[in-house]
Amino acid sequence: MGGNEDHRPIAVVTGAARGIGKGCAEALGRRGFDLVLVDVLEDELAATVEGFARGGVAARGFIADVADHHRAQEVAGEVLERRAAIDVLVNNAGTPMPKGLLEIEEHEWDRTIDVHMKGCFNWCRAVAPSMLARGAGRIINISSVSANSGGVTSAVSKFAYAGAKAGILGMTRSLAKELGPWVSVNAICPGAIKTEITASMLEARAAEFIGSICLGRLGTPADIGEVAAFLATVEPNYISGQAITVDGFQWAT
Image 1 (cartoon, helix red, strand yellow):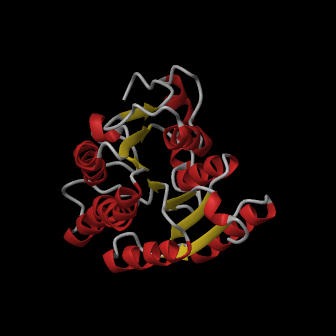
Image 2 (tube, one colour):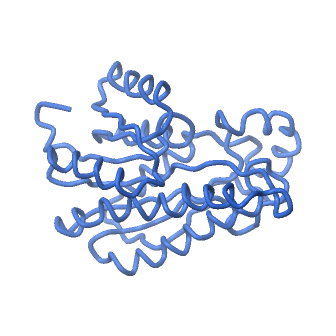
């Protein structure tokens, strides 16, 4: 990042190396945001940053586990040393947990909660002070339709995943109250989105899923990215504390 970078808005996206996070970053990049991309996948993150550079989008990658509170503070602090404020935070990083109650181990439960809920907390805590000091900011949390429907059939959304995503919705509504009127906080609840993690499962059951989706197709990271970009840029903004479902209206769950 260089040049007149302080005159361009900046967005932090976690879990940005691939999938929905990368889709959100791409949509924000097209709208003039400089990007801070956070992930644990070092090689894939480097490739994603390089891809943005080739496309003329300023992007910087940070290797960080979102469950690490100190690392979130460290990365945000480094960004804020160079930039006046962080304009947008997209809390996207997540991890699948296909095991049910009778199969899951305690450490697997803890990791699921740490990545989804603690990760969301860590990054909100890291960026909110600068947003409040500036008097403006937007936080977008990626939840899931399983937060409302419960995770039963999907290979990535059994009860621990669904519970963590439901917790994110509670955090979203509470933080919208706590941080308003200066910072808006919203959530997106994706349905069946084809990513690197879900591709094999969705392909095996494509007909079943598509048959239950009114728009007749699986979702893509770009579908989620466009909604995130809308929430990040809409003016005037009168949206906060909301959970927007993006699932093509999947009527059979």
